[in-house]
Image 1 (cartoon, rainbow, N blue to C red):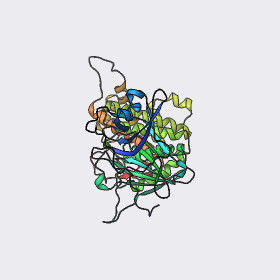
Image 2 (tube, one colour; image 1 turned 135 degrees about the vertical axis):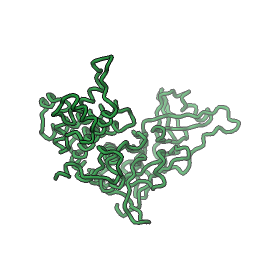
Image 3 (cartoon, rainbow, N blue to C red; image 1 turned 45 degrees about the vertical axis):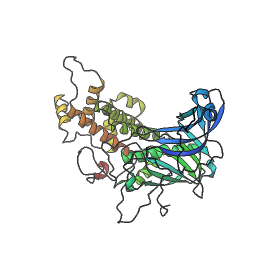
Image 4 (cartoon, rainbow, N blue to C red; image 1 turned 90 degrees about the vertical axis):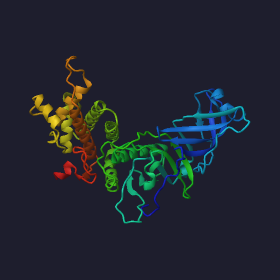
Length: 436
């Protein structure tokens, strides 16, 4: 697969940002159990929010039975068996013809639609939202086809769209071409989608929405598809750990380290949820929200990792404070627990509280508690200062980020958010590799 042409998205957005993924017959089911077939299209949009829409229009005599006026608001929609799933060359026009009085323009918002013959598909295209932007160090005029990696049951190539298309968040950011090493199933495709979300979102430092998924036969014809609105938060990452130049080398390494995690049915959802906490803590929300979320991610990861690796049993775990659990997690991961020397606000808070032996986890959770619990005095509340919040956010997300990388066995370079404002090329070894 490494010598194959660069995989590209099968669909392109219209001028208004709408991505038409299917044009043809739609079977609309009404609340009373009746069905009607109308001609329409499926429309996917990423901005301002991720939506999938079944859109159809026509005279009332043609589409009236499928409209909400007749079929009710709680309608379902499917693609009929045998319909062509080829990517549309152009969209339908829903303009009312001159002289037509009884015109119906209707939309249904299904969660997802699946159609086609899965057993005919030999490879699959997982479409990625914007944000996956690896950069390659190549000679001028030389194109890199993609990044080769593997996950259980699949051989994969991830490829970003060409540079001139990356700026538009209404477009796809790339695709992952997946060839199964065993007979594919709906459940296996969903597992792969979730695992790609974890790996790509971790590498990109932001949510990478994955949809639609298309199955192609040996001739490249779409014979199966699953279309839906992916989970997606648009916007750049607050502070990534993996600059674009590192992604081509980092992604295969993360995938190798993720294999033991996916083989542990208890630990995989812990890693997935901890990543969700990290992404939420890196969102544009106020620091008062982001810090407690990051701390919850550290507690969750400490519960899964310390118990799985035999550091604590459940009774011992429950007896420890959240700060102590986090300190043990960082010790397991060989991540420094001291307050960074340049974090003057947290050092001053530690001294003011006279916690002379307190380390970063203790001061971090002291700040967290100051955010989630009411102050003692109404007339003189002791809220954490802005500088304390910024440093607490930096440390908590840095620690959660590195603990996830340690869990995946990553042992190379990263960009540290403990010192913001530096060049993306100013990377350093992860702490456990630096001390090896």
